[in-house]
Length: 154
Image (cartoon, rainbow, N blue to C red; front, side, top):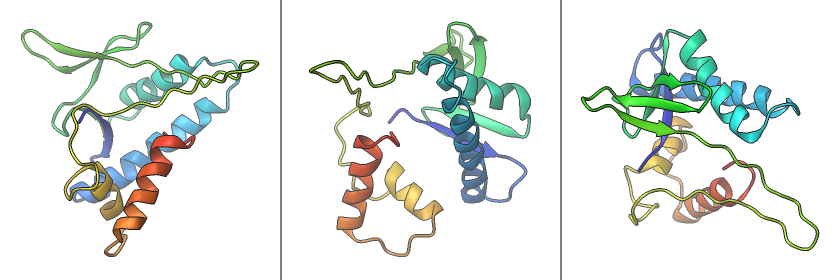
C-alpha cells in the first residue's frame, strides 16, 4: 500500500514517533487547508515541503517507513523516495471536490492492490494501535474505514 507517514525522530519508539509525526502533519495540513489562496495541489505540497524543509527531526516516508522522501522538484510536487540508481519518485497531487450545478465531482483515492483492508497489520490497525484503541470491534473498524475513505478526512 502506498502511503505517506511522518515520524518525529526525537520520540522514543516507532509508535510515539508516528503519533507525533502525524500530529504535526495534521496541524500543517489544516493550516494550509484554511488558506483560500492555495490550490489543492499547493495545500498538499506545501504541507509536505514544510515538514521536509523546516523540521529536520521529522522524516516523511512513502511506500514503506524506510523510504524517506526528499524534494526533487518543489514546483512540480515531485519527491524522491528511493535514491536509486535510478531514483524512484512520486508526484503528489491534490484535488478539491467540485460543486457544479447538477453534478458534483468527488474524488476518492484508493490504495494499491486488493488486500482486505480490515485484516490485522494493515494501516487501519496501525492507526487504531496508535490511538491505543483497546480491541476495537470489527464494526468499529468498518465505521472508521468508511469514515476515513468517504468523508472529508480522506
